[in-house]
Length: 434
Ligand code: AMP
Ligand code: GLY
Image (tube, rainbow, N blue to C red):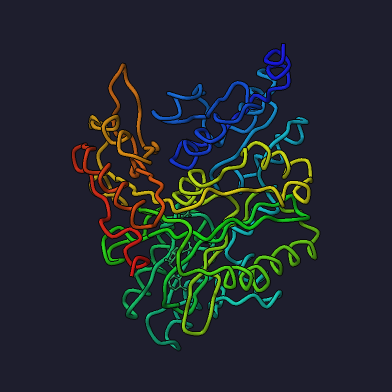
């Protein structure tokens, strides 16, 4: 009887996206007794094993909304930035559908660096000194008057690849040409932000909100560069840890009052209600903490470590954002003790060109290591064989009582997985161990 009632009250959930972040969200939501059927559009090889993959792309808003109506989806959860910035939330709301994530207007904080830099300037939020340009020749003239390194960024979304750290005039010229003249990031390069280079370790802050109250997650840290020692190109993220052991609760309180609260205040001042997850990326410099950028969603691979540490039912938290009841759940958010790590296994060549379609082996063995869960990103299941299907292929996550234990377990599990060309960083979390 009780079971029948629960079933009737269950919420069917649709997750939008196909990365490791979405697999982690699905993995966590699957544990909720309140979640009924779980769908992921378009999903990956891993999400297909615990939910039903739906063959609709993340940018087909009307099609997704029709699917949600047909299946009487109780909540849609948006993972990636592109559909948020494109306005998926507004489309779903116009259909009267419940959806978790910021509106198109609010997602500008990620979608337009011009918008976010101006907002930070207005609200006196510490960030790199910057200037904005919409003409290549004025951008170049500005570079001439500055020293190096200097950072040049496409203002719009560019898959994490629109940021150029330039150490010489030639490199800056090359960046401006690629972004503004060759338009390799398309319209994302209509404007560029040129800013001061910030030195120091990076941390990721995640604040869940209904637009009125927010809950701060523990700190986490991604590793953006492709190679050990923070060498090589910027990627979507090669591995994460949480919490960051040297980020004390005092530091978190400081970040809340200097960054998170003023950001929400500045949005409110513009009459923008942000509902979902705000993720400011911060640099810890000798001059203090500075905001590098904002994201309007969970980080990937940060989400994977958060989902391993979150004790509270994720559906309760997401519902609270949509129903404007974050103040009610705020006090009851619980985290497992200890640490989590996630090591990304990438295709050979990533973040540049890479091949797909190689068989993957060893995941079952890897998951036998204590504390380990393997999240899929670029994978596809054909028959009973799993193949590589993207740049970031898998995220091998582990929890442990100490950061070292979490990392040791994750790397032991990594050693059991194989696919042709597989590459990963061997120094995730290493700097935080010492
Ligand atoms: P963004 O898309 O702005 O987060 O930039 C992607 C990555 O580029 C960041 O995570 C940093 O590693 C690096 N980056 C961006 N801006 C700067 C900066 N001003 N100084 C140093 N590194 C930066
Ligand atoms: N962790 C980097 C990102 O999600 O943008």
